[in-house]
Amino acid sequence: MRRFAFSFLLSLVALVSVAQSISDDTRRIREEFQDRKFGIFLHWGIYSMLADGEWVMHNRHLDRDEYAKLAGGFYPSKFDAREWTQLFKEAGAKYVTFTSRHHDGFSMWATKASPYNIMDATPFKRDIIGELAQACKEQDLKLHFYYSHMDWQRTDYPTGSCKNCPHDPATTNWDSYYAFMNRQLTELLTNYGPIGAIWFDGMWDHKEKEFDWQLEEQYALIKRLQPTCLIGNNHHGSPIGVEDFQLFEQDLPGQNTAGFSGEQKVSRLPLETCMTMNNTWGYSITDRNYKSGDELIRRLVTAAGLNANFLLNIGPRPDGKLPDQAVEILKHIGAFMKDYGATIYGTRGGCVPQQSWGVTTQKAGTLYIHILNKVEDGQILLPLTEQKLTQVTTFSDKTKLKFKREKEGYRIFLPELPNTVDFILTATLRTP
Image (tube, rainbow, N blue to C red):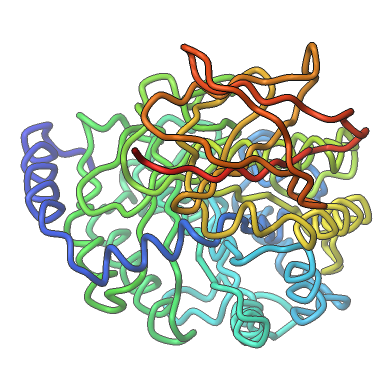
C-alpha cells in the first residue's frame, strides 16, 4: 500500500526533531561502536542450500511455495556457535552482525510471528540466534541483527522494484506486514539480551518519496525496548532522523565504485563499511574469487583511517561450517590484529587525510601512520600545519626516525621498508 509523499515528509521532520536531542548514553554507545572498529557480517539462511548467494530466489524467479520447501531439508548438522565466535574473537573482531531475516522472509530464530522459521519449518529444531547470542556473550562480542524491510515470501508485503517475486495486489496489506515486522523486532530485542544494533536493509525497494515506511514509530519501538541499541539502515542514502550510524555497502566512505553511494554524503555519525570476502554475501559454491588476506587488511586499515568500522562478510555453508577460504583469511587478519590492533581499536581517523602512501589513525596526541602502498625516495610528507610533530618512531621496534619541518608540513625519512602489508609509524603530536 503506497502513501503520499506528504506523509513521508512529515515523518522525516518528526525524526529530525527527535535526532536533535542526543543523550549522553547515545553518545557513549556510538563512541563504543566506533572503538570496536572490526566486525563480522554473516549472511546465512535456507538460501545457502542452493549455493548461489542470498538473492537466488529472486534472481532465478523461483516460485515462493517451492522455495519455502527448502526449509524442510535444512539441517546444518555441523553448526557450532562457539566454534564460530572463538574464530571471530581470534580474528580480532569485536562484534557480529547476523542476518536474522533476509529478503527471502525466512527467520533464523524461534519467532512466534510466523511458522516460517528455523524451529517450526526445519528438522533442525534449534534456535540459531539463541545459540549465537549465548556464544557471543561468552566471547564478549557485541551481537547486531540484520533485518530486512523487504520480504519476497509474505503475500501481505507490498511489492516494490524487485519484480521477480511479485505479490497479488489483492493480498498486500501494509498494516498487517508492518505489525508483523514490529512483532519480530520486539522478539529480537526482548529474548536475546542486550543487542548492539539493528541493521536494516531493503528500504530501497520502494522510492522514498512514494512510500512511507513509518520509520518514526519503528525506530521509537527499538529505542523503547533497548535504549542503547543502535540503529543503522542500508537505504543507500544519507542518515535519517535517529539513525545512529551510516552504512556504506561494498565501498569505503566517500567512494562509489559499487554504485550504491551515488547520492550518499559522508555524515558526522559513526561510519561502517560492509564488504564481501569474495563477490557474494550468501554462500556460493562457484564464487572462488576471494580477496587476499593482505588486501582485506589494507581495506580494514583504510576504513579506520577514514574514520569507519569495517564489517567483513562470510556466507556459511548449508552444513553450518564456514568456508575454508574464509577461515584462512580470518586467521591471517587475526595475526595482524594481534600485533597491530592497538593502532586500530579505539582510534579515529587521523588529522592527516588519506595520502597516496596510506592513511593515519589517531588517539589523542598519538598519530599512527599506516604505510600501505609503495613510497618513492624513502620519505613521506605529513601535511601538518596546526600541530607540532615532536617524535616519530617505528611502531614495531620503537626506532626513532629523522624528520624536518617544511612549509607544507613534516618530511619523515624512512628506513628501508620491509615487504609487509602495513608498515606503521608512531608520531607524537603537540598542539602549539
